[in-house]
Image (cartoon, rainbow, N blue to C red; front, side, top):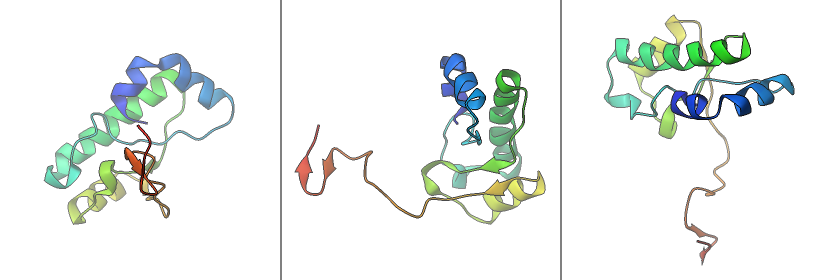
Length: 105
């Protein structure tokens, strides 16, 4: 979850956690992390995780970088803080206004 979303919808975060779903950090502000320094990457992950913990009482060790971006700095910053980095393996294109060649929005 992104920190901004966590702040807007704390009740939803709590409910998702209480129903047994694992919550992972997806950064605090959803920046292009490849443009950030090592320290800025750590700050993005940790601030998000702090917000998760404040609401759920649990910290996560899972991180998925925004936009699917990663480079050596992103990976090292997450791994040095003990995070397991994940990515997706299927792109549903659900973020796109065009899906399977049909305008859906």
